[in-house]
Image (cartoon, rainbow, N blue to C red; front, side):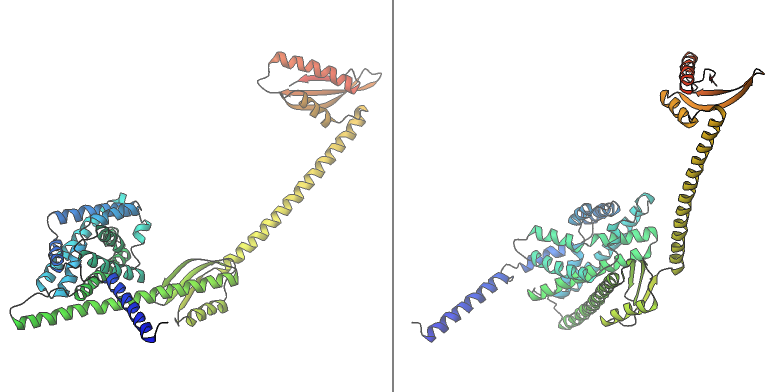
Length: 462
């Protein structure tokens, strides 16, 4: 049986093993190549020669991908882009107090931005390439998720970059995830087309990505204890230290502000979406064309179906207020007069259909009366109970070339008696041969004389 002391030792050993496991799993110090990383980042800062040309060509590829709405082409452009170099340089410079590297990184970063904007501006200046695609639109409205991606990507990039055995897949993946190129291309599109909301939104997204990648680089450099740059003059070293601290705070504080603002914007849009989904289910209406403005604290949308009254709109405002956003202005695009007009139009259409049905019934009744009258006249004229309509239908059924049948009677007298002579005139189609017409007329004459039991029946062609 184990003693309490033995149990305590076993537990302590298990805890120690677990700590060792965690430390070995997450330790990034032992494989860090600090000096080689500094040299490589400094080498990648330059935006001259091949880097400048690669940047131009990658911007053209990315602009083409945005224009044809192809994510695959945009990803390919991001893989070959050298955009990350000056940004890593800025983060490293702040972390090791290297003002020369900071100046060089800022200079090359500015060159990079100008080259990218000019290249994309020239590309999108061609009218053929000015389509407003989804790939372009998606780069104009940054969210809090973009900050999370940029910060996480920056951490992953500098950690992978500082290894002795670097992971090319990680570096390539970060280049894709952080998406620095598409916002610059979209900003160029905004300049070329005069769509300033595209330019402003895309540049905001680009600056967010830049700041948070540099911030992540700074923190990892500090965490891994990269060697600080040595200065012979102690006073100069102190001034540079103060300057770098000031610049770091100048970057970090806006970063926190950006994060908070974008978080509140995303939360505001989420609350509005939940509220409108709820009102759709409760009122049985359709809601579309939703526009939210976090800065102005306003919401506008259109409804289809029944209109919303003042009480219902107030209910929407109260629900959004209960989620933490008071005094939100709600604008509903609806037209009560148009709804009344549609209702009245529906009533008129129904009335028209009813009248048409009544007219059709009246016409059918009148046609039936005409047939009865004609049949009675026929009986009076020749004593036959045979209907002209029936005879005409039979004639037509016997020959498809018949276009029409006419009937009239002639009163004839020899001054001893008066006879009523039935006359039928048959109209044939124009392409019917005369020989065929003569043959058919003779056949119809015999048939009608037999049917009407009257040898005086006359049948002729028109």
